[in-house]
Amino acid sequence: MSTIFHSYTDKQLSILRAIGKYKFLCYPQMIRLGIDKYTSNLSTAMKSLVEGRHPLVKKIPHRTGTAAIFYLTKRGKEMLLDLRVAAANIHLPKGAVLSATQDTIHRTHLIDIQIELDLACKEKSIEVLFCDRYFDTVGNARDKSLASKTAILFEQNKTFKSDMIFMLQIEKQKELYLLELEMGKNSKKSAIKVMENAKAILKGSANQKYQYQKAYRTLWILEHQSILDATITRVQDDVFFANLNEYFLFKSLEQISNTDFFEQWCNLAVVKRKLYY
Image 1 (cartoon, one colour):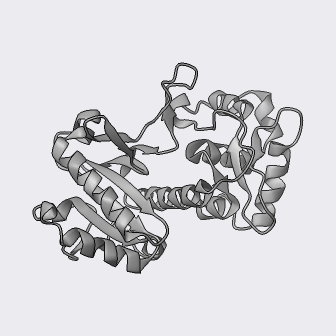
Image 2 (image 1 turned 135 degrees about the horizontal axis):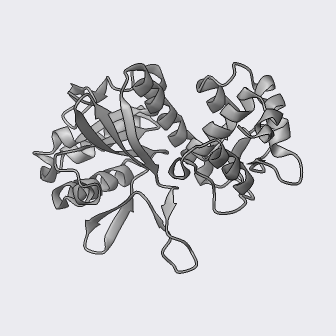
Image 3 (image 1 turned 90 degrees about the vertical axis):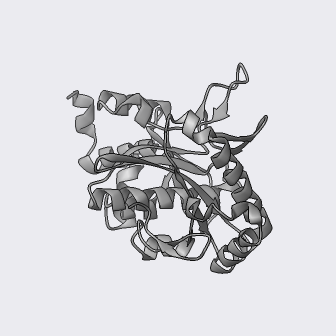
């Protein structure tokens, strides 16, 4: 290993790998990943990663009282490549992130969900074959080919961006999931998204995109239990969904961290289901 790595501790290299994997990370997420138990220790380790003329990590400017969120620089990516991390597994923004946006809270919670998925899979020896998020892109802006990796066709020339799409290897079978995280208190908006996903299921768009030949499930995580209940009620009243109960599984955001990730989902008939059988 190059002597350049000797300038960094194992903890710092773990931070780099984690940020490269998730694209954006805050200290509570690093603690959840087991990199360290204390924010003060992480802050000390982060210091030399964000300082200097060529930092490996940058921090998104943020208001006092809100969590600091970090992301990889191009120099940080080069470091991970030297550490033999595959390029496909290193995520970073196209350029500097100059401010937090309205999307920041949603994106942070989605990464929380991905972390819970990863930890649950590790515990059960389940392999995550891939995991794409709506903020992961392909193409580039120069030739106007930039697009979200999770774009799914549901009608002619109409697409939606799943918040997260992942595939698991569970023993001898592969399982595909499309996941949506709904923040706020708008059950009508959530029900519209459920309808778009239902149309995509019937169209087979995700099956074709991922060369997946069997049925898959869509996962719905809602910030508020009351909006989860209201969304299910709206959908239940639509005859379009009469035979689609098992394609949609729901949990509240609070349940994601308080229950086994693979257990205690409910379908459109409000029957408890596991994520896989």
